[in-house]
Amino acid sequence: MIAMDVQTLFQPFSLKSLKLKNRIVMAPMTRSFSPNGIPTPDVAAYYGRRAGEVGLIVSEGTVIERPASSNDPDVPHFYGERALEGWRRVIDQVHAAGGAMAPQIWHMGVMRPHASGWKPPVPFEGPSGLVMPGERTGVEMSEADIAETVAAFGRAAGDAKRLGFDAVEIHGAHGYLIDQFLWAGLNKRSDGWGGATLPERSRFAVDVVKAVREAVGEDFVVILRLSQWKQQDFAVKLAKTPEDMEAWLTPLAEAGVDIFHCSQRRFWQPEFEGSDLNFAGWAKKLTGKATITVGSVGLSGEFIAAFQGESSHPSSLDELLRRFERGDFDLVAVGRAILSDPQWPTKIRENRSGQLRDFTREALATLS
Image (cartoon, rainbow, N blue to C red; front, side, top):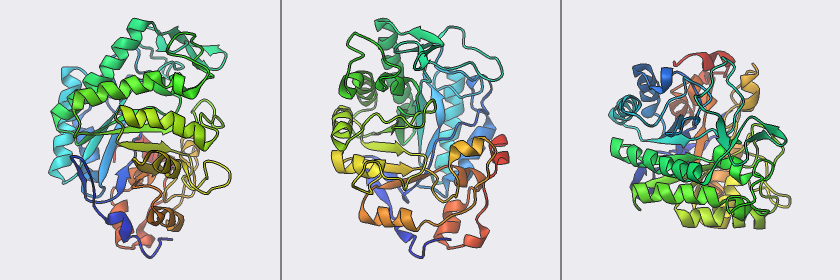
């Protein structure tokens, strides 16, 4: 089940001030164990248990300071004295265990109400108030709303550096706010924040990256997570050709992105016809920037199915290693396998395939 030569994943990685002991990234995974947005000591312990094994932890999505940035009262905040003190405990525990960590800063944008019935104090906000093409559950952001949101991303990034985090990741994927501006189906604006082309609709994302870069300085690594697919529609592709992708990613790279975190549901699927390169492979080829690949690494099933109760079993890393050794990407993000088993990287490194655990939905219910 484990490829024979896995040691390439355990080479160190260095970029600017970020120094990682190996190439394995703990992927961001929403856990909803932070009541009223405040990370608890249990959250700190959860990350601390994994810090000694992986090169980099990317936190669960943690929302910026906007009244409707979240649709879940138990998703952590990255603003406010109590929440930031909770994150200080997290990063201190991660560092004590020998790890490195980036918070993922996030605005959900226009959402449907949470299953619990909880709602934020004001309506959800987005480029055009749409959660799906033709389905309005929020309001269109004003120029002031946009400016204040860009500034809030910058403040969160500055707080991440001040608290001692090693990098910061901006969540620009999966149909959330930044991605809603990118997606023509949800961005119907006729002003300078909309447009017929993907580069035109990228203005908001570019401004967020610039604000984050200004807040953290040049030596602090900025990661941007992007996806073609959306939680609302798995079949959406923002960039239909390599030329589209280059026009999309180049301005983001120039604005200050150091690493593109390229989200796919299955990392082995090619992005465009005529090449077996995946999203991360194309992003690196087109921009020259470092990339992270992600999507069902080490498991037989993809993560959307996991939320519907489907279990996954350990699977071969041969294809991952083939692409990594070819130079397609620099880092590999692993989610559910590490959520189920904090020692997954060590078991991989030591070729202990018989000790790898299945992933089951029950793992989502605890902070083990």
